[in-house]
Image (cartoon, rainbow, N blue to C red):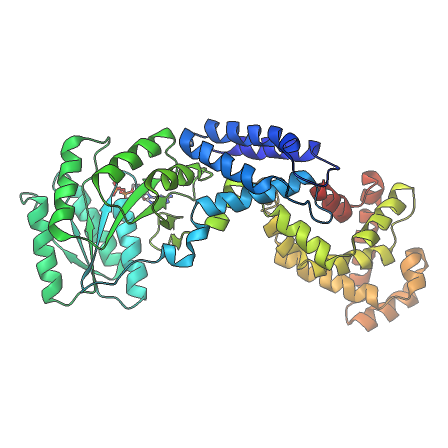
Length: 448
Ligand code: GDP
């Protein structure tokens, strides 16, 4: 959805270099790109305006710290503001359900057909069952008997109780009967699933308003499909006008959507996004995390965190020395390799590095088993540690007797030493081609 934002930001990050401050002039182009990308992604215009104004205010005059480029610093501001606007400044309680009422706590679900309401009822029921709550569900979708059956199925899967409703009854009567039942059977929570139409219509809004008035739920959750574009805006507006919503559930975040709808819906309703649906299965519900969503919308992985860590734990100068050495035709030897492994470990190993790469890169590397690779790197390190500095500088010295000594020192078979040496030779050849040095090149790439 917001792929363009990533591309646009990456482009501007590259061009914004060598300035110590964020200024009106050097951020103008970047902000224009952010604005265009958000609009292209169907984020509502007022939401875009408010967002840009906030970023501008925060960014102006901000010192560009340490080794960050101004572009990276601005990405940092954009990320922080995205998170703030999606609820990070509301605190973690914002995603909690409110139970401060006489039981049963009533949760009313609202949203269009297909948004994921029934599935979400099942997920919530499961989530609440795990918190040892006694849960009852009921459907007031008298227009679609299949929907009632679907709720019965997911309720059973969640291990909660189901209140059967007759398609011939009125929605308000059904909800009241379910409430009576819940009171008599000491349920902690009653979740009411409602009918959804394919579009917003007056009759449906009146029906759900009447339901709300009759049962006075403590939570009224608006369920919205993250894949909806501009429609998410109109739907959110209609439901927000008709009902005093208390929160939003954003579903289908496991799809292609980058979550742009989160921004609009948050802006229009002003209500916290409480949960995110991340799978069809009943365990696919997560407390909404504004920071994670901001990263997802930016689509730049966690570049800033990586740069931060790189600055904290890794000797950037040594890395640059090495890069220079290789660039200048110097040989990449096992001492360099050992130093590289050490730096990589400081950054949390290969698997942790992977988590911080942009989504596209992560996908490209998804076939590789990083834990396995980490283990292998550790074994290689053991072997290198058993070598003398001389051997590391000149691996060609390592003949049969030295190999036996090294293998014994590292507690491995001689074949493994051979394998390691031939892998190293391949790597050396690759480094020559790159003329930059894999890891170092990657790090420098991310700093610029
Ligand atoms: P309702 O009409 O609002 O009750 O929507 P349903 O609960 O029937 O969901 C509509 C479709 O979306 C179903 O096929 C669900 O399996 C699917 N669905 C709901 N939530 C999610 C989700 O978070 N991720 C995925 N992938 N599918 C979902």
